[in-house]
Length: 260
Image (cartoon, rainbow, N blue to C red; front, side, top):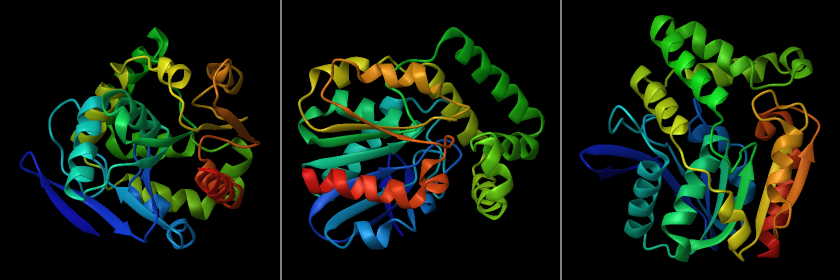
């Protein structure tokens, strides 16, 4: 892993391979290690960047609220430092929100976009209330909040089948500082609706959803790409496609990149 100094904090990232640049963005309570099993194959013919988003992994916190725009600005700084001008973004969950913010702020960098278990829509009032409840819960009992949050990302069937994998995700999640968790929840709560990005951009776009996703309703979110040039890939499991449907997810990414 490498580090970059940005606004008085350290940003942790990796940079490997040559070819078309792919930036992999992890979700809430995750970090860049979630992509480790994807990197050998993806970096054979591509330049692959992974990064710990603000307040996650080995990247420090910038403030009490990490907006999606804050995250996008940090990404822009990294790409400028690395002299990268065109990128395919692949964002899981919160990583998708960050990719959409980047696409709106810096459209000239966009070569392709994959939203994985993510949505272009803003939080509903109910979701905003749930974010506030989550902030109170994590401040009250950090460990219980993190462990329950991770378990709920998987489909019920997979909570029994993937106990080892889920435990590894929990251990990584427990490295996320309290401030990073709160800042991300606050940032996701106030993020803009960016469905327009799906409708008004011409570069290739792909939406990956799980039919048993307990975080994002499948039917509701599959409708966001109606009348767009975006494609939809559906998996039968939950919110954690990179783990629950690992081989299929990797193949989907490789196929998407090859077509660009």
